[in-house]
Length: 329
Image: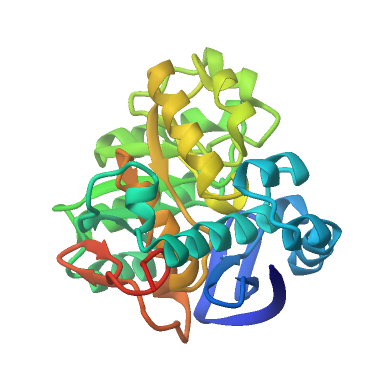
């Protein structure tokens, strides 16, 4: 087996703003695994708030080069590397390589039904309220919209109200990206309930999960930063209603499938999300999305240039072409 690793800078079409961060580009790592007859690809952006950047991912991949080139499989990879972007890139490349070698698509290898278009949220970056309303209006086909908030109750309330006035027709979610504290979260609740927000994502900082036990939220609450891999799922019970699974967080499709199964057994809802990246990163997340209740798979809408084949959006739904990542050679 031959392992090749490269770094790329994926430029964004406009700055993307969330609590505590403004992104203008996304550094990604691309892995190529080849046996001489077939090759598999994987892309990862890492987990920015954990310092899981391109340098960290490349170093982690190099640390297991010998085992990978000797033929380590996906389950062995889960023992070799912790959750994170390095394992995600390698895991997705191994899935793609198996599809190319076996002549079977990844969805069939994973025991799933043939994939279908999936309704996705369209994310609106944090900005002034009217600018966010204009962006939501620009997503004319969207059936679901997710707003990035920043932890300012007054401003965030105006943001939500402005978007709801502009788009009374859509399913609406908000994502605080750890921006609130238990004491300030109550201040935004009247706006969320009045605007019929259907999902509140990661309101409190990672590490404050226990504080969620005493909160009474009128809408489901999703854990994002509070859940990385499989070991984090069970402690969410009684604190969150939905698990947001991202391949860069959990370390690839293999672990993500196990997380979905566990979440279902525990009675938790399941959401698939993404770090911003190209269609190479979105394709395995789209496969996972076939099993999920909610999908946030709009990451390619924020980049200036995508790869081919590319994810497509139509009628508020996202699809990946039948040829490309995860398809037989």
